[in-house]
Length: 95
Image 1 (cartoon, helix red, strand yellow):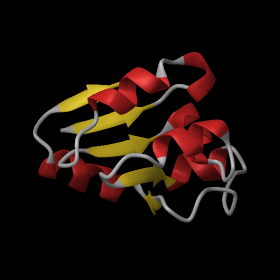
Image 2 (cartoon, rainbow, N blue to C red):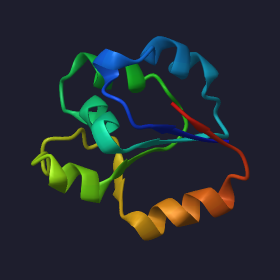
Image 3 (spheres, helix red, strand yellow):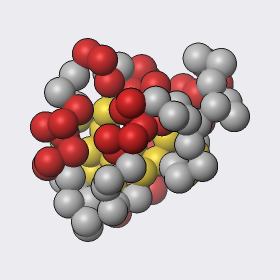
């Protein structure tokens, strides 16, 4: 399953999201959700417990001036990568 986080980690139940995501899933941080990828942030430390791949939408990082400020643990992808994720994961939950 593909999970997408589009809200700021301060405005959502991040703990509940983390409990839902399994090893075979993927998490994409997009829109204001990219704030959860900031290096040394509280949200980043919570997300780091996940064993599934975590991706960050590059265009949203650029729009917020956050390029180079995210954890090296996460993989930046573009919109084509987002499409690839939707093709690999038939089910999607937007958070």
